[in-house]
Length: 269
Image (cartoon, rainbow, N blue to C red; front, side):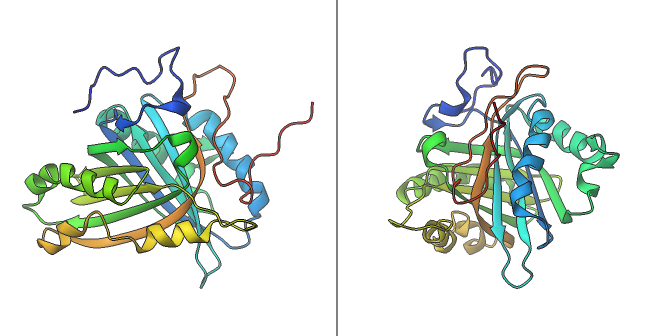
């Protein structure tokens, strides 16, 4: 289903227009954390771009969706990352690098004082499919995790065709089924297009609510007693990264909800 010979860093590849169809990736990495309410939102894109210039050069990275949501009760921002890699080994190596070796201003990435309760996983990709173009239609993203039972592995691997068909029936833009044997976790990423109301000036709350309330693609795992849900978060996609080449100019990222969400300010000419 997924070719290990796909060249993610091919010189002629247009990363922003990956073909519709099965996603050529075998590994994934996810991270989730909160940011304090007092973090200046307008400064966040510049911080992200500084990290991207380094993080997007890591071996085998295919793409990253960076989510952003708001926690009303605490006022915190909720963010993290949803990455795809060519191989599971590269996803695992990324987890080790970002946890232990990525240091900026003398601080390891997940030890930054403004990151609250970070949690992260490396995954094997059981299946992934883009139903709509990534550059035009990846606007909101949902990430769900389940704690899997000891005998769930066979069912997880067999579940992908039905999960993919349900994602297509729901009109989603993309869906990924992930498994971490190390942590006994099942992960499902669902991506949807936006449908902003005419004249709306704020973030697209309508599309966010539709995806958040949609039937979970992983519901059969619960119905068959194979897993217990531990995490479910729907967010706007703040930015989408593609691979960068070390030492070369940094190509632009996508900022699919900007405006109204903040984006980097172009440098003065």
